[in-house]
Image (cartoon, rainbow, N blue to C red; front, side, top):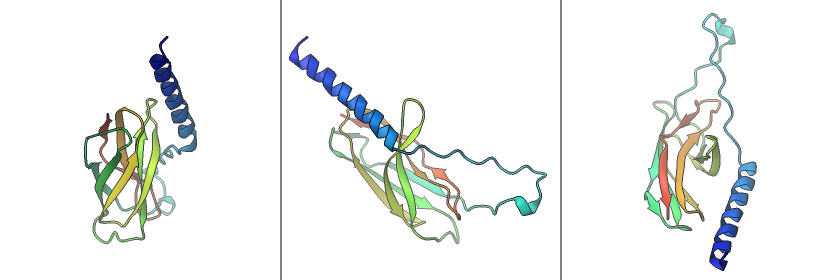
Length: 150
């Protein structure tokens, strides 16, 4: 084997190890609760949460390795949906189909937001922005988008 080939293999092995260890540190999405049965008494049903609508996408669809990926978007809660700052999470889909948190940002309802992250891996990355369920708002996710890291 050539030195270049060995370096590439070592780089890929290091990348695989860091992704595996990083995945252990990240949280997966909690399972959604099943809706109450239609014949359940009204006293046992929880109050309806306000819907959240997320629009998000990359500022650039292609970036170079180490360059910051900027995600811009808007979170809308509809009329009378004002609340304290809400956390939004930038998530990546793994090959196993699990979404893991990469970064977070605080955002007021009905405002724009910006998220940024640097990746030192080349390839295509599948991302979305996620708003977890809170006492006032339902969980929501933006449309899935892809960023190519060269």
